[in-house]
Amino acid sequence: MTTTGCWPTSPPSFGPDGAIIGYHSNRRLPDRPAVAQIAALYAELRAVERRGGTPREALAASSERLTGILAAQGATYDDFLWSLVPAASVAGAR
Image (tube, rainbow, N blue to C red; front, side):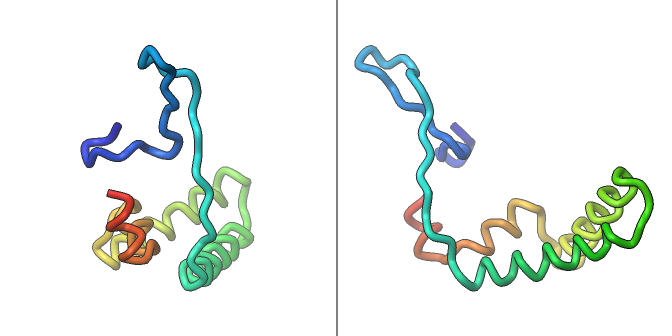
């Protein structure tokens, strides 16, 4: 469990004795504006990667670009991800 009281991505399933017996994940339909925002960002990062170099250099370049975008917004990666979730969903998740 995280410090916010939420399970990361796959919370455990417990047996009758309280022992963890497996993990489960809930799937939801993504928010369309969030998908559009991610698609645009993904296209930009892929364009950076296609500019050349080795695969390692391409990945480093796109990672650097994402870091720059987040820094310009004054946001962490987690802040960015939470900004994509509609407010009603966030309230229910925490």
